[in-house]
Length: 125
Image (cartoon, rainbow, N blue to C red; front, side, top):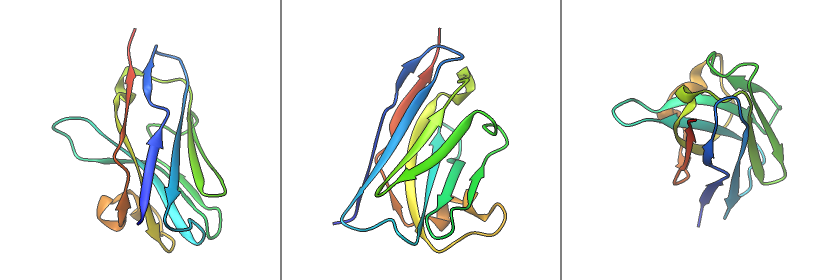
């Protein structure tokens, strides 16, 4: 059974840091892309970052560049989030997709075929 499980969410003060983890079971992440998305109530799901396990390509939304960093260790993908802001508050989801992406195509949720259940990140003082 294909499964993605996120962990590491929580409550953090503005300027703080969190590391999200996405673990895969039932399949290998080799030759697949892993992405992180986030969503707040009433808004569309937003692409945050991705990494291609085929060639190591990464991508970031402009709103998180320089603050977030994506990495991989075997079948787990991490999202290191530094300098967190209240507007980063959302449910964060990881997802996986076959192949590689051109440009910003990775930011379309429809391009991803398996999703985790999400983990809440709240940035507040």
